[in-house]
Image (tube, rainbow, N blue to C red; front, side, top):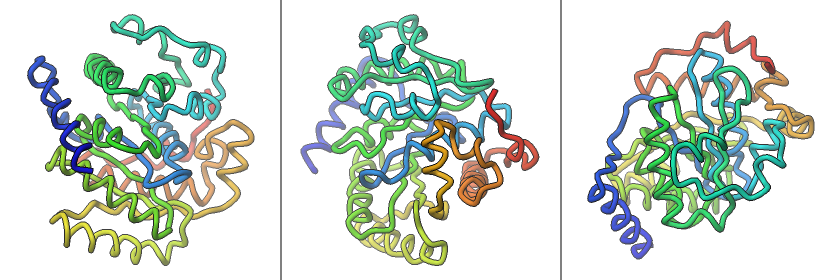
Length: 285
């Protein structure tokens, strides 16, 4: 763990030396979403947040940096051949621009290549390009999934907020704690939020309390809890249909819970609250 943190600090130093600053932009302009463990629902949460923000009139770029080559591509029902055929390395803004696809009005999508590309040099180039693209979007959401090692912390150094999703399991809580610790070792001023997935609502406070107790005791820091998302058939049914659940069932339980969690997050970030009427009229363009 210490070796990983040292390597990330060294890499961050190269940004400063090279003149690429990573200062916070404020609000929810730059968000990294990661999972405490495998299958914690980060991708569906990222897509749901992107849709909800875009329906508020924000221009959103959703970035798939998970290395799984296409989970978000399939969920957005985009042409997989365009993204999975093996793109160029994308060393300049124009090449990256060509990889961006419009999902619907106010929502664009960018796929970073597979795991073999998510090495330090590629990540560094990715962050440079994100900085250049930032002026074109109100919000940049980067989904790093349940990436191991220093990837969430690497991207987290650039973000205004890092959101970790987590399942209600002991081993997932331990993994989540480790990722929070690594991120704080790279950027002590990190703003971190947590969202429990596939959980009974009555258990959310107890789970958040356990996590915060460990973080406060050993790290002197506690993440902001955004609540939890229940488990019902909405998510799996929508996934089979290749339609985000916030679109397929805007009045569904999970959609409403995600909407409330996002409202809480916007309040913490000092952003304008969601327009409830717009959230209730989600549809595919």
